[in-house]
Amino acid sequence: MSKKVKYALFFLALAAFVAFSVLMEVAGLGPSRVKVEIKQSSGYGFVDAEALKKYVLEKVDGLSGDSLSKRIFSQEKKISQNPYIEKVVVYAQPSGDIRVELWEEIPVFRLVTDTGNYYVSRRDKMMPVKAGTGVDVPVVSGQADKKSFPDIRGLISALKEDKFFSSQTVGIEVSRRKKKDGNVYDYAVYTRSPGFKVVLGTTEDLDVKLDNFRVIYSYLYDQNRTGDYKVVNLEFVNYLICQKK
Image 1: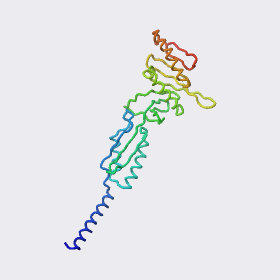
Image 2 (image 1 turned 60 degrees about the vertical axis):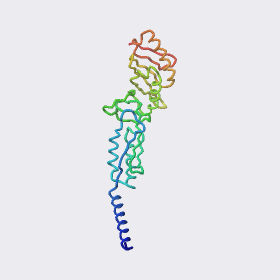
Image 3 (image 1 turned 180 degrees about the vertical axis):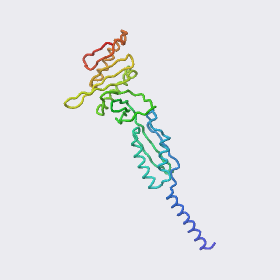
Image 4 (image 1 turned 45 degrees about the horizontal axis):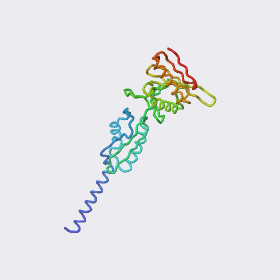
């Protein structure tokens, strides 16, 4: 084979390779697969992994290079705006596959007020209540607002550590008082059985108040009289008040 023929074949092959590369850059090979991994699950299925996978694939399909990188960044930002997602990371692997790693928000309580109905996460993020999704968290009602959320989370945490309240708490009512230095929040806990309203007042001296409740509940239980009362007021640390039905 002559040198001229060899050079001609070489340049034809090179031209074909360049043409193929240009076509692939224009059309884009696109990712062959999108994988969604839920790193932190709420346990309530707030995020549909398959639906998210399909959404991401539609948005990045046919893209490569800088176009793919820009689209991944914009989609990560958009997905992070989902109220049920605490954190999300989207990136491309060397293989061309796209990985989506996300952390779901963890609901701590359900807030029911005149202005709305939301789940509130451990980061105090408010999430709309999803129809058909049952979430086993305490219901908080009354005059709760964002300033009271840290107190509410602390109260719920303390109730979970208590043998009685951890199984019997069905709701928490919040009332608000105005003082010169700002609002003061008072709390009452409603129990499933024997149907008590336990008035706590503020969360100050909460441990002492819960200890006082254990004393009076143990006494009433031993006397078989828990069903005789409807309100146990623990607002005052040094004494308590029981109101009969």
